[in-house]
Structure formats: structure tokens, C-alpha cells
Length: 165
Length: 177
Image 1 (tube, one colour):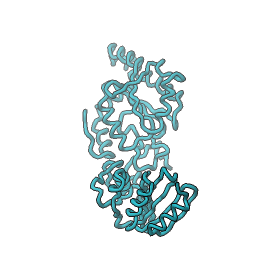
Image 2 (tube, each protein chain N blue to C red):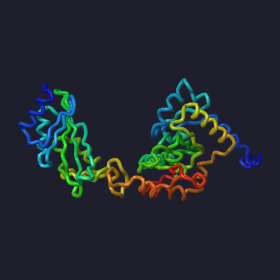
Image 3 (cartoon, each protein chain N blue to C red):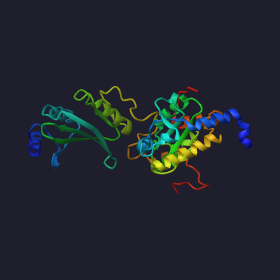
Image 4 (cartoon, rainbow over the protein chains, first blue to last red):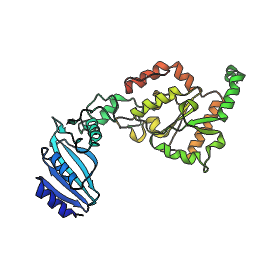
């Protein structure tokens, strides 16, 4: 069983992270360049971080970047590691992780649904949660929910007054 | 009285019998589902009003839409409703089905249930307590008894209106009716 410091040491010794941080007890955040990420993830898997809890995506619209966050957990160390990487927002493309964790296929489909990120190597990126979606992906920051709702749905009329007024 | 005369004695009898014995399809959407177990079980016990549960749409005549309805669920609700046998009644729960409620600015929840399905009555609240649900059920029973609950007939008469609205938000919808 390693503690947080030892895990960070292990990562810095074997991999080339851009930044490591001990967020709090049992929680580490590591940033990688996009080209090192998959290798880093499979390295961490071989060191006991067997569970991929989820993949999340953050839209940093001012930096014009998407941040992919891979949440790993080790049942030996009892530590969460968030492996973060940033990709370009315009050409939102990354490499699939499904060879390392088969379950990643569905997380990637989810992210493709809501952020429009393409994952090379994942052939099944059909809609998982949305249905017949024609607009820009709804979780992108430049998607205007209010405008979409006003265009798409009709408000109930309370004698000429909307309840949203 | 005139309305009752028009219904005919036989239909009147059927309505009287119908309102004493309703089978509720427990299809849950949103948060309202959590109010139904106390309504069903011994604390509030809706079976004393003759309302029981049904396992499948074809056995049920009461469809509860318990809370917010995403467009994806709306499709399933429509399939469910069209599978149910007549007479069938829809009850909308909570403010989400009335005008969107707290999800009014969500991109994937519908705002007015009665544009897509004929709603007999709404139970207001976010969420309605079991007392409010029972009150709503009693009103529904009265409406059935007096012959006012004719949502399924309206649905058939205005089927183009409903289908148009449904297709506006869902795209293509498979039809069983």
C-alpha cells in the first residue's frame, strides 16, 4: 500500500507529467500532454489503479480547449487519481481507451453525445443518451439552453403572461 | 342531466363501475415516483378507493406521469399510452408536467404534457404529497362517474394535433394506433 506522496513519486519517476498535485487525502490530480495520456493510464492500471470510475469532460471555452478527466481508483492504495489532459476544442479528437478498459467505450459515447468529442478507434459513437439531436452538443458552453428552449418548446399561456416572465 | 341522458344508461353504468375499480400503471418518471409507495401502502392506502396496480400497459387504465418528462421518456410514454386499452386516463403530477416546473429551461424536458397526451387532470405541487394525490384520484373518480373524463376520445378525435406535436419534439414516432 502506497500513500499519496509515494504515488506522486512513482508517477514522476516513470512518466512525464506536466503537473502533479495532491488535492486532499486520497485524491491526486495529474496532468499529461495528450500524447502521453493513454500510456500513462495503462501504466497506472498495471500499478493497481484497476478501476476506471468514469471519464468526464470540461469545456474551457476561453482557452479554446476541452479537458478530459479520467478517474482512476486503486483498491490497494485507496486513492483516486484524476488523470487530466487537454485537447483542442475546434478539432475535438482524441484516442480511444477501449483497448485498456473496455468500459471506456460507453463513457466515450457519452462524451461524444454531450460534447462532440471524437474518439479515434471507437467505431460505435452513436447516440447513447440523446435522441435525434441536430443542434450543437448540449453540454458545450456555447450552447444557449434558454434560446434552444424558447425556440423548441411553447410556453403555457396564463392570460398572456408566461410563467418565465 | 342532459349530458347523462346522452351517455345512455349502459354507458352510465359502465362509468359507475369503472370509477370504482381503476388499475394504475406504475410507470415512473422523475421524482414523483417517491410519493407513490406511501400512497399505495398502508399509511395512505389507495386501494380503499378501488385503485390497484397493474403490471403492463395492456392491463392498466390509469397512466400517471410522475414528474418531469424528458423527450426520450416522452417517446416511451406515448408507446405505453397507445398500447393501453380504452378507457384510459392520464394524470399529470407536479408542476413539471404543467409548465416545466423547475426544469423549465432544460433543453430536453417537455413543458406542457397536454400538448402530447390528453390529460384528465393535473395534481399541483412539487411534489404533491400523498394527500394531494388521493384528492386528485377522488376528483378523477368523480370525473369518470359523471362522464367528463373523455381524454381517450379526445385523443382519437384530435389525433392529428397530438401526432403533430409529438413529432415536432421527437422526430419520427412509431405508431401502434
